[in-house]
Amino acid sequence: MRDLFTSACFRSSARIRSLWGDTVRNEQGDVPGWVLITLMTAGLVVIIWALAGPALSQLFEQAISRVSGI
Image (cartoon, rainbow, N blue to C red):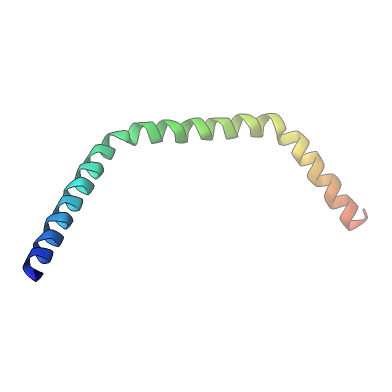
């Protein structure tokens, strides 16, 4: 009975390792997608910063002047 259980454990662990290896190998081709997402996000940050930068700077200066009492 113990040999049957041990062999079943070895077979299931080998199957899990095989499936995990297939999953890891299938994910390697997705790097260009992540690069594109990162570049698009950086572009959006630059555009939003360019549009809202002066307003945020003015808001910050007002907040500092109110706190410091100048």
